[in-house]
Length: 258
Image (tube, rainbow, N blue to C red; front, side, top):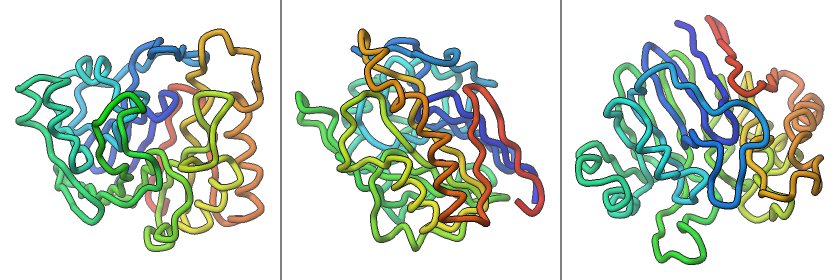
């Protein structure tokens, strides 16, 4: 088994390398996104053009048009079924040649790895002001390792069917102090998700990066603490799993036997 590495650039922006294939998830490459500001960590510094970008749903903090336009190269854009029309309008006609729509169960071969769309429990609309909709999804990447990128999700029964996994990239928080329970994981639910998918390694994501302008001191614990809290709870519910809380820009490398 060759090395698999994951670099967390904050929120849900992840650079995943497996079997020589590079994948970028839900990129937010800017320091500002509407009313949200990057409150921790540097803006992502990509190692080069990825082979594919995995887009889990249409919310602007995951499908960020300006960031997608800034991604170098001409990577494959793997999007939820129903998102291609919006993506073409937002990114331009040349991007349409690189779009692949997927629904849970669909698979895309990217070099030496297979990318499979899996369910997610999360609202798939662009936002309350938009009629654009496409069901939210997650991804399982199968190469040297089996890695699950959950996107944004709440708990769902089919999580049991995803494992066993080598690596789980699990959302544990959000971008504001009013995170609702529906369609999201807090640290406790994220620990339960890890128990269900039976991953050997887990990295908490989707926290500690973006926060509304002017609310930097409001419920600060919801910004800074979810990763460590998830690790604490996961140690109880999944004692055989290893949790790595990454700093922004930090890389975890899994070698043979991960």
